[in-house]
Length: 237
Image (cartoon, rainbow, N blue to C red; front, side, top):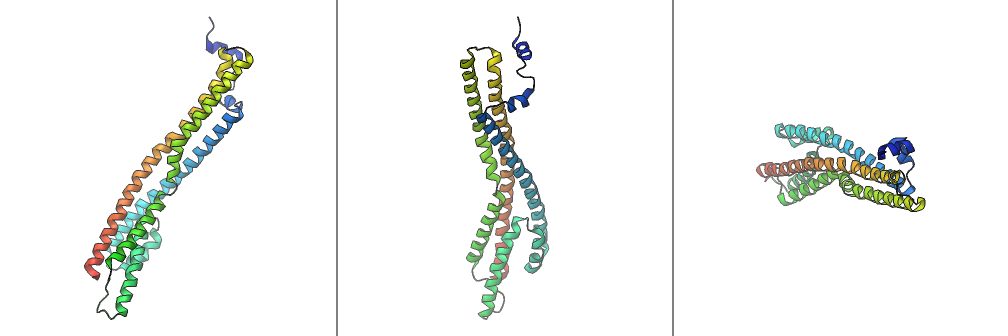
């Protein structure tokens, strides 16, 4: 008895392997594969970009905190901010620094004996707005990874279903249900499924990884804002 593998080999249906199947795919399956490749390329671009950005944000945040806690003047801290712009803490500090300077100038115009911050609530709102802006900046483009992880398996499944439909249509046209007739269409369908998973799995993994790192940075931002407020309350009220 001749096995299915021998029959397929003798028929020459798979002489070119996977690439031949991709090249011979129908227009719908080809469009599905192209869209999955595009999803994967964009996802990997984002993964590399966000990996670099978040690593830099962590490193520069640690440097900024060291400078902030050692410095005796906010002006000294502000002087190093241009070199540490990748840190979300810099944006929060600069927003607070601008608000403090405005309030101090107002108090000096009013004849205050020493620099005074009159409204901690206004300062707090400035810090909250800046923190929200920095968090949004950190999260930018990461949502595409979530979209890729959730959508591409279904795009691949669509290609699979369409390939199976083509396989059954070929059975109807040829009047034969042998494996030689059915196998190419089924193989095309399974390639679409594999491509969908290949795009989705890295996107899901790195989305979760980046989300956890962004949460850590967001916590650092919130803690820094509270520390900043405490310093202002002790020294300028």
